[in-house]
Length: 447
Image (tube, rainbow, N blue to C red; front, side):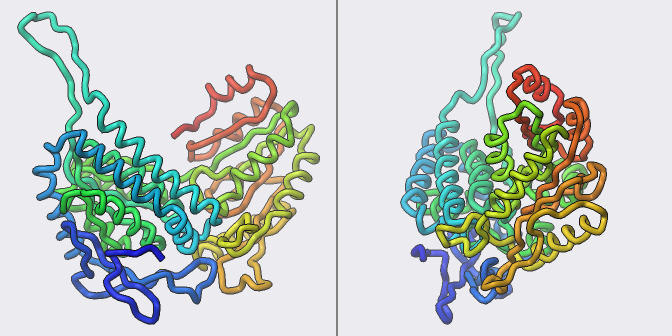
C-alpha cells in the first residue's frame, strides 16, 4: 500500500480516505463514507471514501474560485515545474499505483502499470506545453496598431471522469487545465476513487498551492449534479455515457458554460480480402478484448469480406477462446473482470438477447465460476452472422463482445461502418494503399 496523507484512519486493515479541499484532506461534511470493493473479489474491500454531498462541492468550488485569483497569474515555468515534479513523484510509485489500479478497476496488472506510466507521460507532456508560445502576432494595416492573440485561463473547471481509465483520463484533463492557469474541482468515478487519490497526492506533493486542485468523491447525483450546475464553474469536461453527455449539453447550454465531452463508440474494424489475416487477427482481438472490452475505443464490430469470412472467423474463435480469464494480478491473466456485478449481469443479459435475436454465439458469453464466482467475470464472446442493424450491431455493450458482420464489397463495408450513431475510432486491414486512403477519407470517425 502506498503511504498516504489522504488516509485519515484505518479500521480492520481498511483505510478511509477523505476529500482534498483547499490543500487539506478532510472528511465529508456528513461524515458518511462509501465502500469500494474489488471487481475480482466482491469480498475484498479496497477502502472507504468520503460520501460527499452539495456542501462538500460548495466548499471545493469556493476554494478553487479563491485560488484562481492568484494561480491565473502564476508563471508558466512555475506550473511546468510542478507538473514535472508530480510526474517524477508518480513515476516512483508506478509499481504500487499500477497494482492498486488493477485491484480497484480489474484490468490486468500489465495494463494497470501501463496506464500509470501513461499518466506520468501525460503530466510531462503538458509540463512542456505550458512553456510553449501562448499566442501569435499579426500584421496590421495601421502602423500604430499592434495585433496579437494570447491564451487566457477560463477559471474553475469541473472535471468528471470515468472508471475505465481511472488515472490516464484524469491526468489528460487535469494537467492541461492546470498548465494554462485554471483551477480544478475533480469528481472521479465512484467505482475507482483510490486511483484518483493517488494522482491528487502526487500533484499536491509537487507543490500545488491550496485550492488549485480539489477532489470530491461521491455519487453522480450528490456530487456531479451540484458541481456542473454551479455558476462559478465556467467549464466542464466529462468522459462517460451518452445519456449523461446529453444531459450535460442541456445544463451547459442553459447557463452558458463551456463543455467538452468524450462519449461512447461502436467501433469497426474492416478486414478486406487482401488483408494479412494474422496481422489483422492480433489487432482485432486486442482491440476488442483488452481492458475487458471496457473502453469507448474498443473494437466491437469486425466487418469482413465474405470471401475470407469463414477462415477469419475460425481464427478469431480460436484466439478468443484461448484467452486466459482470471485474477488480474496474476501475470498469466489476459482478461480480468468487468467493473462490477451489475456490469457483468448487464453484459451477460445483452449476450443472451443477441442469441435470442438470431446472432450465432461461437465462443464464450457465460458468467464464469470455477474459482471466479466472487468476481464480475464473463467469458469473452464472439458472434457470427451479426445483422448490422440489430442491437448487437448498433449499441455499445462495453464488455468483451465482438460481432462479425459479412460484406461483399468495400463500398458495403463503408456503409455498414458508418451507419451507427457513434463515430469514435475505426480501422481497416488491406494491402491496397488506395483503399486505405479512401477509408480514411470516408469513415465518419475521429477523436
